[in-house]
Image 1 (tube, helix red, strand yellow):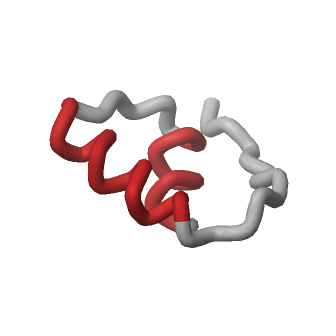
Image 2 (cartoon, one colour):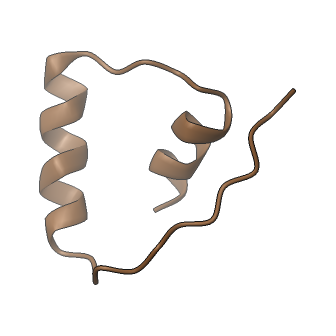
Image 3 (cartoon, one colour):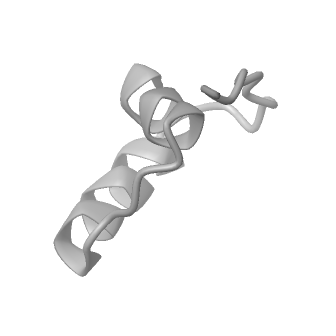
Length: 40
């Protein structure tokens, strides 16, 4: 998911509501690794 990869890339935090939404969205995705390059 691009949203999660962007959050990880920029090391952005999430609040409880956003975490819940992301968890629900990710539950429908296959269990595959996500490759992320962290921003400097």
